[in-house]
Image (cartoon, rainbow, N blue to C red; front, side, top):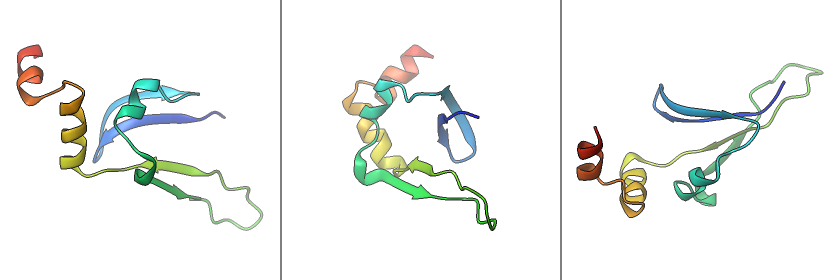
Length: 78
């Protein structure tokens, strides 16, 4: 078993990675966005730590804009 990470908008998966978090993803999230859970509640189980970074749509759009991914730039690219 390994560690996995991904960027999702609700249930839509945008991209993923195994074993390490890509460095450029760090620009989208801050430590205050961090949420930790241990989803396995079975007796005797060694639950894995699940770490999630979550932010509102407006916050992520503002951070993307700062990085140059404005709505206008995205429309031109696609």
